[in-house]
Length: 602
Ligand code: ADP
Image 1 (cartoon, rainbow, N blue to C red):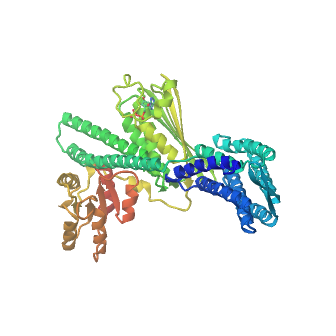
Image 2 (cartoon, protein in one colour):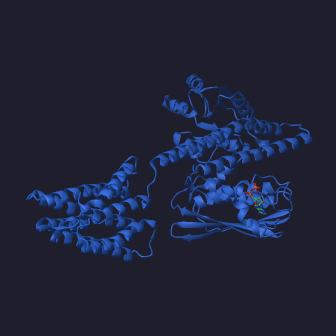
Image 3 (cartoon, rainbow, N blue to C red):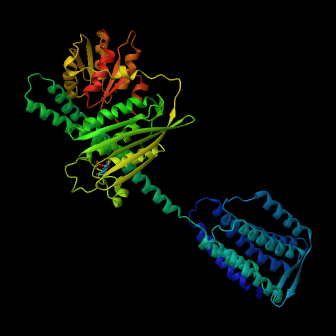
């Protein structure tokens, strides 16, 4: 064997090993890997050609020897081009490869190699190729490296990491090789240098392990499944809790109106109602937080009247303050447009939360509820602030305020009920609505919570007269309506509660346990109003409603009466065709509104 082949022989073992290692593992198909794969393979081919070149130089065969020698040079040219493309690809932020430029450059250099004649010399170490084509390869390498340096210069400040090591090695070794080649021409060092650089790259290239990615994906899917199972469990749990809660509140409401009830019993019933309300708040809070964690909480926008919401909030806060010596001061900007577009349920929820907290954590003094607006084009920024003269929050505790299940000074607030979920939910909801929430507080003096939310202004839309809607019956003056209603629910207890509440209005209440029974009943007789549960086995309330609507001459209004009471459900049910939505547990006031709307038209 010619001595000059010593280094290529060593290199070929390395190269074979590298090919085996590289191809024995599945790789991600990204540009980086594709380029590297080409380098690994083309380097092995170049090494094999190195042998062929030595053979055909020693045993010159016209044309065939030229083809072999030139192919070898073209292989070197392509290797260096792809190598520099790879380096530019990882250096440049935009990760763009100027394909036409490279194709053009490689073509020009290849043509030069093909056109110019090649020659070789015999040295003590063996034959060596010379002539213009060899210089073309040197020129190409040199200019490509300069281009890479130019790219580095333009993109300076970008990351210089371990991935750049191979090109540094290539530059240093390239220069050394050129000098050695000049001094000892027969030593074949160029291709082994490339093998060394390719080998180095194996350790610097980002090589995400497919197996690890698969395992991570499986773990991710499992975690997502577990999280979904948790959300599903929480939502079904909240649904299940609502049903007995419906019975507790429903019967308590009905009992409260019994005449001749002893004072003590009345007080007890009020306590039961308040406790149920708290339980419902907790259930809703847990449901909201689980939805937030599962990224399933959506903002559902529609047109609404902001004044209606402010009125409701004032009423709710007053009842929350109860007997406490607290003055509720209200300042509402009257220039706020009548109709806004946004998620009114969530807007109300976030404001109610800070108002409720103010009522909870203030013992005496005042709560100032201010709503200002800032109108810019078609956007109305609602700036809501709630200032209290309550217990205040320590400066270092303000950051913890929004952590879920975090309650400050539990020991001091033992008598105040809460779960520590309210502000965590509020903050997330405000973020989802692209708003802001700011807290200012002086410990021992009071706190101020400011919420800013942008809502779209809706012109030319008239909402249902809210005053009309707010007209409810006073308990004492419930009209005795001579109407017939049907309650459809698969749960006996729910039917009992609804019947008990509806009979108070003097209504004749009929009931059934399934969608098919409902269809049968409505076929035989007419009702003035139907209350329909949705989640029923075999045929859901929604399916039953669709079937009812197919019946000729069916005009009875249908109200969905459901424990599926999470945000967005009302809109969903109304779009399915229900006339109204009544969540369980049934609130007397909400029921009043429905009866008033559909049956009190005499
Ligand atoms: P919860 O009221 O159910 O405990 P929140 O998330 O609404 O939960 O509030 C978290 C904590 O922040 C409360 O436990 C309370 O310590 C503190 N906090 C909230 N609002 C006020 C306020 N207006 N004044 C004083 N402390 C407050």
